Image 1 (spheres, one colour):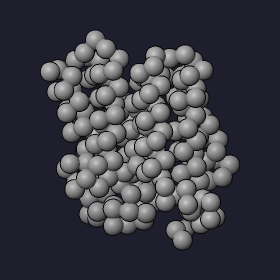
Image 2: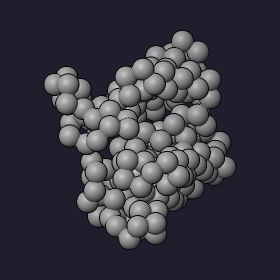
Image 3: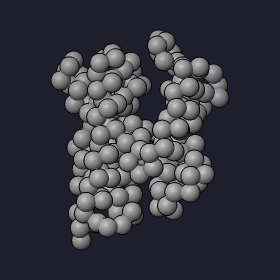
Image 4: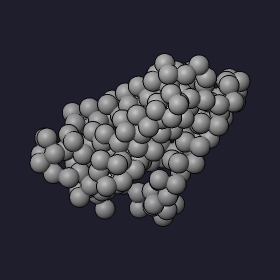
Length: 197
């Protein structure tokens, strides 16, 4: 019963879209009607600037961390922590408070995976940062992060629950970034700092 409660709370927490809330507070707009239409840190950065974008990124990470910690506190198993992390990301992507139209879940995924497997996540994050710095494609960095995390968890021989969580989240990331993948392949993806095409 505690596991079910923890998962529900984690989903509701994940459904708190800081991108939408901060955009309404700072500029009185619905971020989903501007830029890429995505309720996430990258679109907030493009539409509102570095301060709000950074705030959204960090707050979305915290959501993932809190969900995993909640899972550990209310259960003795790794699987509850994993389920709570997944629930928070599902909430971020499909938030009940905002018509089930949210972000792509990468920042919250960072928080979840860093709480479950810190070193593999840090290395995957470093790979993503280098890719973004070189190409200026945030979507490519996000996809590389999602793809490398399960591989690094395997190398580190972390618990199976963490591997399956990272694999599911990798699939989530690729599904949510499918339009970005098409644009990357066609050379039409927007670069960080460039005007939208």
